[in-house]
Length: 212
Image (cartoon, rainbow, N blue to C red; front, side):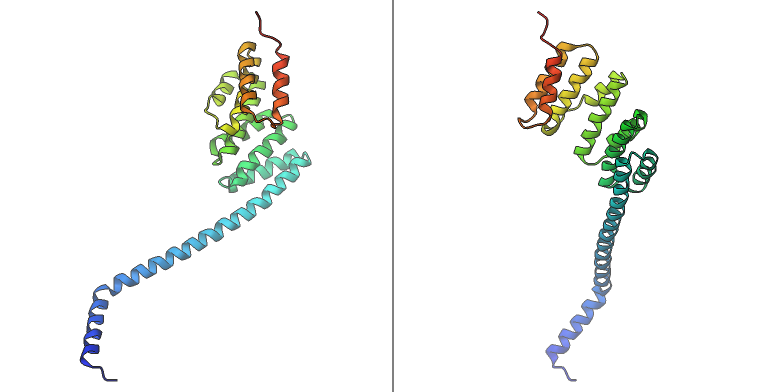
């Protein structure tokens, strides 16, 4: 096929351009293709991990409902070991801790909640774990440790719960006036429809009136 002078010049320019930049262009295309493949592969891996973690979490819930503590320990261990970085690991900590408390093993519950406080990525799970752990520590009369857990700036959603738990701590320490103040703060922070309000009010009433 014959080319006119203009076409021949364009072909020569294209050859020169490709000779100079061809390797670079191929490298960019290859890197982009690998990036897309890697992104899709990572998405597939995450989906598979989530599905597997979900199945194990359901086993944990069933074991907890059946009060099968031995199975709770085994399944929770698998979740923390293999899927601890997923949301199911955080949820499992709360379920397992409740099962241990119900079974009369607060030590195991404490270890599980400590793991959640240190490893939970979701603020809601981390605060829930802190509050439950603080309650255990108060029961164990580990007041200093409980106080450290509660000495945080709680977000609006948890402000009432933290104040309530501080009231519990102060009551246990024999500081009724300070406990009353904490419970009143909890009532101010809790929403009008909060199911906690009645319980907090009962605690406040149980302390009686301030002296003097």
